[in-house]
Picture 1: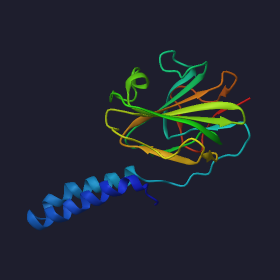
Picture 2 (picture 1 turned 135 degrees about the horizontal axis):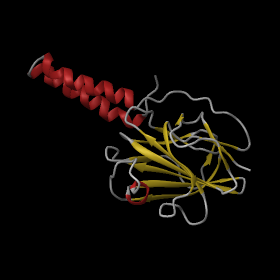
Picture 3 (picture 1 turned 90 degrees about the horizontal axis):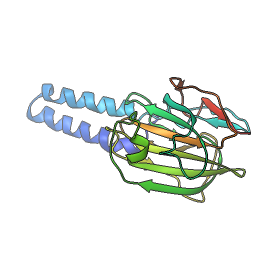
Picture 4 (picture 1 turned 120 degrees about the horizontal axis):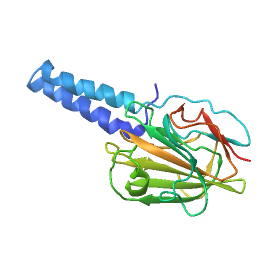
Length: 208
């Protein structure tokens, strides 16, 4: 299976340390490190996804469970009025992030912050995050990569001026995190709180 390049230092590092441990303390000392390397390999997996087509489709930007689906929480919303979809990623979910809509990246912001659990109500307000604004034929969609208590780094691989295809990979978050999507008020939400979604495949909303 394909792996995200962000995982290579973690996988290679633990294998190297495991090899050194096997030479110095024996195979027993290497086993926990090899198990950790196997976890990193699983965590950084990058499976192929087939994105549904459609002019009005909004795709899930990540695998996980829907935390919020409805009017935007006033304390976390970007300027303006929005609908909000928030997705919690457990450490066992695929952590590759994808754009929910095709379009032109008009803005990318990074904000340092805290590391509250990603499911915490205040995580979207205070946690470290990357925010991407996409122009979809004159309609703006905003999505955020938000770190959690274990996820200590956001990898965002897009910049203003990039043109994205539907479901295109845009980055990764390391070890448990959250993604928020903000949509125009006249969008139609198709998922509810508690639903499981698949990044790049699940249709979470339709734009008008």
